[in-house]
Image (cartoon, rainbow, N blue to C red; front, side, top):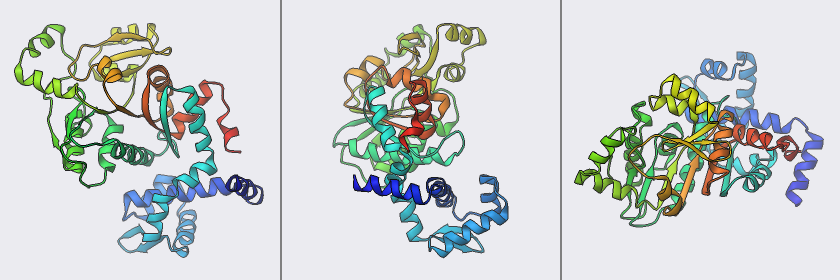
Length: 352
């Protein structure tokens, strides 16, 4: 209570504090991920004049948070510690902790982590989401378990931000589904292999497309090697997956314009593993595919970690996480605020 009272006094004395703090935090965060960063690239990224940027950099340098050298700008150990440690304070100041509590009431999830910033305005937010997801993933790992990971940018960010430290022994990492034919870095097979390397764990891959005809699926299930890897995938204790918007995922799965119009007519807003959900969380369409099945995901997996960001995904997140139980949800501030707006809650009031 005393800490909250202190925050109120700070707001009265320095009402611009949250905005100023967030601006400098974003600058430090960009330097952390892009070091050594050049002045011009920073000015272009934040759309700032070089004089304004120089003034901010001079302040951060005087505070001992950055090094400004000929090769570029980087963080000092104090600056790095600040970027990695300020999140709880920043969340309190911005009202994100209160927002997390509200989202727990709105969604069927046991734990919510809201990352400061809007992914649609700042690409660095994706890496922060990945860092938060990686922390939760580490907490869920146990010896001799199977970890399944899906494809997509959000899960790729978790792989990127995982620390390069051994996990408990005997873990096997597998892709949750087949491939979508998207960029290699975002395919489930690639992400599973990267996660396994970071964890010093073993992995098995599923070298098949995600969307197949029912006849092709039935034939492949007769193959002993395919059946073996599918059995392993469906024994996963921990699952990491993202959430897609219905239209975007339909296009990535090769749907034509007529199919997309039919999905829209059915009210589809979100997609997970080939299942398309309407705003009430009802399954309105399904594309047959190989990998972890929805009933296995809901009934057998001990820890389901969902990572999704951007205000455009708010309806999709509500459709999936608001109607089907999950254990952990990591999202950005932009998506969180949009979800609350759709629920008729004034998120801005929580930070006052």
